[in-house]
Image (cartoon, rainbow, N blue to C red; front, side, top):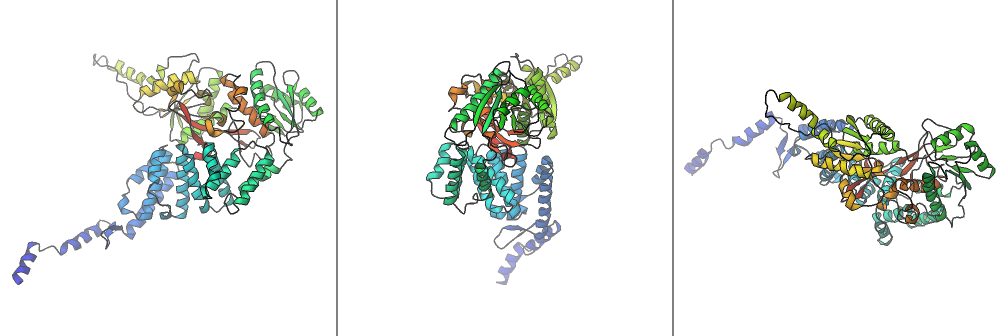
Length: 599
């Protein structure tokens, strides 16, 4: 027996020392993890504290917009050395980093394994917010709304609830009518209740009294629902407040001259909305004046003498300035254009300004992770204005303008775009420099690494040619973000397949399910089909102008979701439009949400 014991011991005389030596090595190296009784390695308190600090540093880098540094720091962390909560936090940070680069699909992959209960309360809030933003950015509005519904009970401040609920309804409003109506027939689940209310609120242009009654019925049915609070109370207050609604509107529009067709398109939209309200006892009277026949002061005096208590128009900037100089406004005036620097009591300015378009598309490009831009616009006065708007807006956000180029509006050869992206000019110069030493050397085009986005102003015909150059010039084509004129306003999949991957922001009225009902674009086809596509958006503007006349008192506090966009009032009484963004896929615009829903 003793011999047997000796033999077994002699086979591996140092075996009892191995665990001890291993422990000592771990201790000397920092001892980041120890094996527990289950055989799993658990981080030591020292490692937990070290990684807590590293995760806090990454979060700080993200908050200061140092995304590259944040990602590099995250890449140095070994998930095996983290606690369960820290691993969830690392995935959250990685997801936020991916969002900052515009990689929404990768962000959603990082969010997928996270169990919210593993996170602290502040991180749970960040998780649901970030996941909602990622879903919105890929056009999954239902799951975006679901994330915000889960976020709702975690919030405490009334303002946070109001903002979150507004974003829930914003996402749900972009769903097809069939999905919203399903909320009426489903069992009373939290989602079904939200869908039911969203279906009511989407019919924004119905009779205010009827809409108020529908909201009251919903509130009675769901008294404990979180939306049954200040958000709906504020909305009902606006619906029942008749003090701000005009009883008689004077409409100043041109019936002749260079703006006659534009005036006709706006009037078509206004009258469509007016006729839609034929059963509303509070509907105002409308009297139309030809703004080309009288001076601004004469128009104003005549309208006042005939009982107007609201004016919509004029359209021409010069006439707006003239009437503002000539009279003191004793009633509200909703001018249908924007005159920079003009401020006057009771004067509100509403127009389809390219300045808003430029700000929206640069915001979308920035939020999608782009930083270095080529600006490409037509070589004309309008193109120069748009180029300035794009450049100013991009640089205010911190973006860099690498190249600014123009093209002739009649141009059909856009090969210069691919040459710029391929650095062919630089390749040619290098070739010329090397000819004396190496006669057989040929130019070697190389992909530029300093341009990741083209900020474009072009009509669809030119944009198709430009996009073709971009898609064939690069292995990984640079992204194109275009002004709204890139879309002709009507679906044309066969032709617009050449615009695939181009992102733009536009009026919801032109984009599918975004503006539905009796005043939707399909419903009003007999009215707008008489115009060329450059006037479609003015029909939508007319619809909004009519409804804004009764919304001005509330617009500073509550956004109005109109045909031309999400409308708010600035401090200088200019109505600002937030456009709906979309991306051409399979030749058709796929909605990607409002900017406010993706940041």
